[in-house]
Image (cartoon, rainbow over the protein chains, first blue to last red):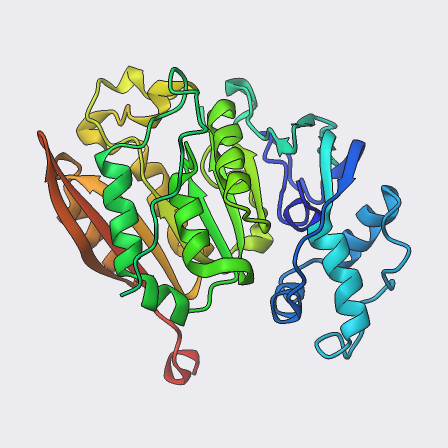
Length: 126
Length: 221
């Protein structure tokens, strides 16, 4: 699971009001080469919650090159876009957990796939 | 029209638990191939498939659109999520993630209005209602009453997750009452059309397309 996707996921356990962001507990992380496309990254950054990306990348030791705030000139700042690309697309969480910030429910990540499925009694529909 | 090769899925060997690509899957591929100019033109950033199964459809979409989009495959069946991952990886697609979940449940509300392409080849076979809700192979086909029970769970979410100008492709059979689905979606302001129809054995399959209109300046006043 890429940090880009982590940035999009939320906990939907019944009763939870704010399940975002999920705390990432990474046990196995790999870095994979992904072709850099500056247009893709700069468009995607408009949809990304930057503070969440920065904090999550920092927690797993891949946030050093990321600024605290999204630079004003991010669309034309090639060096920054490369760093953002690395954090969003190349850092892969292979094994770990995603922890719901409110309920503490753990969603396991195995072989790079987060399992967000809830048991019946955890879902809002009855 | 450029001919896009059917993704190779000979490496997948999990058909005791994951739906094996069949006529409906291939009709979906043909529909996407027919739509390739439109798909390239809308320049999608985020593409999501619900019920990605073997991964053949999402892989095909990625081979049309290439590395300028992020592809997310969601399946309620963990083994299917693994198959989707293998399929994308086997075809050297890099910009993707697979998630095991029910529908779009775990996509944060921040994702509303951001999905540019949404694909759904649903469990469309009419079955007794109590056959719906599994997480194994039956989840790939058991559709409940009129084969609509799972489709009807996704339809109300489509409009809010699609971006302006975004598109939703849905495969149906005649028993799902595709005309009624088009009316339902049109009532939400989505422009409905048929992409392809084909008879496969006893099933009359149709791929439907729904576009979320871009708001014009007049709409925003």
